[in-house]
Length: 238
Image (cartoon, rainbow, N blue to C red; front, side, top):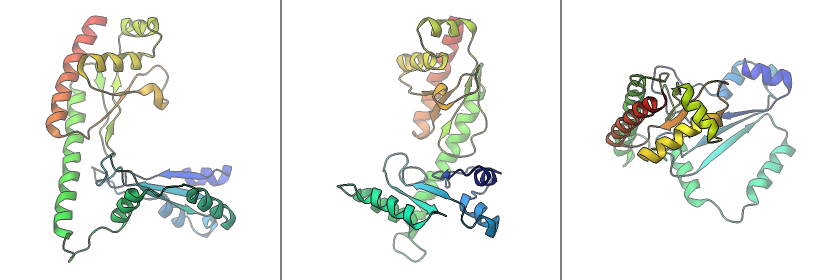
C-alpha cells in the first residue's frame, strides 16, 4: 500500500532497511525492492532508494560507521549527480568501506574464518534477542509504564503514564513532560533516554526511547535503577 501511495502521489520512497538482521520473531524481513518487483512491470520505473548500514545489524552494533544505498528507477542523469555528490568528499571513509565489504560479503562455508564468524554472529543475535525479551518484560511490570513487544531493531519506546502533578511540574520548568521525566532519570540514575516528543508521538501521550545494546548484566542493573527511580517519581508527583 505504501508503494502504491508513493507511485500515485509521485513521491520518492526512501527505505531505511538497516535493521533487516534484527528480527527476533518469526516475521521474515521483506525488502522494498522485492515488494516493488512483485507488483509487476507497471512499477519498473518506480523511484526508490534502499539504505543499509554496518552500524546496525550484528556487525557494528551502533559503533562502526559505514553503509550503502541502492538507487532504483532513477534517470541516468540523476544517478550521475548523486555519484558526483558522493565523490566530492576529500577523504574516503576507508574503515567504513572495509566494514561494508565485510557486511555484504561475509565468510563462506569452507573459509578459514567461517566457523568463528558464525559462532560470534549467533552469539550477538541471541544476546540481542534475550535482551529484547528482558527489557519488554521488565518494563511491563513497572506500574505506570507499558511497552509493546520488541520484535526487532535495538530500541524500546515505552509509554510513560505521568500524573497531572508531574505534567504541571514540567510545564513550570518549560519542558515537555517526557523531557522532564528523562532529565530527572538522567540526574538520579545516569540512565540516558530520549524523550518521545522528538519522534512525533501521539498528542497527549508520553514516551521515552531506550536501547538494549548494553550487556545483559548492565541492562538488568539499569532496569533495577529505572524501576526504583520510577516508583519514587510517581510517589513524589501523585
